[in-house]
Image 1 (cartoon, rainbow, N blue to C red):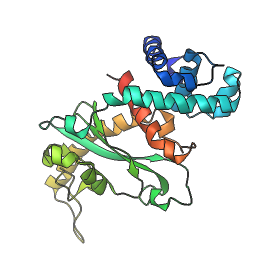
Image 2 (image 1 turned 90 degrees about the vertical axis):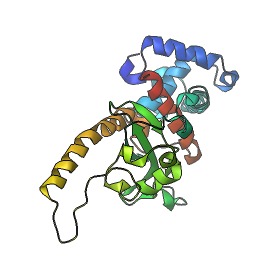
Image 3 (image 1 turned 45 degrees about the horizontal axis):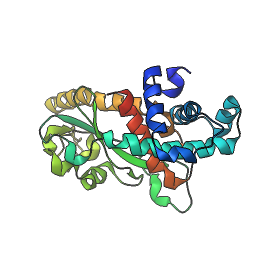
Image 4 (image 1 turned 180 degrees about the horizontal axis):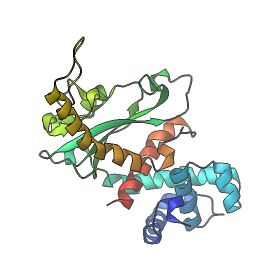
Length: 249
């Protein structure tokens, strides 16, 4: 199965299968699928956001079998690879960083209006992403409700207490947090030529975090509406971010 469908090379796939089978919870997965098939099915789902019925048809099993497989293996991947994701405490205090927030979309549950993002006009979870000047993922926050603004999300994450905020570049959504941001156009006024040039320079630097987010969302489960129960979304986000780190060491 090609890397574009699973996101992993053959070597990475083999290593991941070895990790999965070493976990006792693999016994909870349907036995009709081999460990390799179970891993492939889960990765297909996370990488392409293909319907479970479609994956079931490809592998010649039932949709409930694929559903149970994805549930079990997502938990295992999140638990085994998740520790590779940096916590706030592990971020080097000194360094230059670029930060941005992104919405990970999900269905509109009637009892969760707090998931609605006024900025994006849809429901989802707010994820804060911190990268190095070269675009390497340094840290990703715990997902927060989509209604939370980026400035509040980054403040509550604890990141700004760990690093020097002015050493971090962000967009205008972080104005007031101490993060270095573009100049905002004053009411009834205009930016000076120097301010416009400064904004242009910052936007060129910020491009790397937007590129990293795009690469993360190549795992389509984070780019399109999440369809599984909402309580499984954070675990799925952790598993997918861990797989991104696993494939981009």
